[in-house]
Image (cartoon, rainbow, N blue to C red; front, side, top):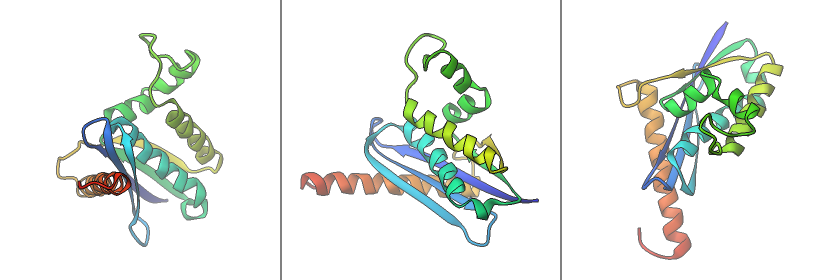
Length: 167
């Protein structure tokens, strides 16, 4: 069984502020990099967006993932814990409320995560989410961190261009 490792990361300046996300697919013939930005967002949204976009890519390119185990790496405790500790299941049962009764943040992104997770499982693709320590020298984690930070700069450029000012 082949294995594809996907490293994801999100970044944000002045949280909330301009943000970016990235996902890097390794273990195939070529390195595949996905990325994007939002002019105003939060770090947690970008961390989750990176995972969701990676999963969306898997669903949309399912033939590339036949007979492949997928490991998705994130340095976000928020994302990894919500998934692996099944907080999402509890949130759904509690009508998208946390254990303390507050409204779950980023509900639409979590719903997208659930949708893509279900589609991946229906396709027979096995995946797991793995916590990686950020900024610890892991080559691909550092790489995807740079991708996300580059997208923060793209968001800043977009904002500067849109309002006609300097950065």
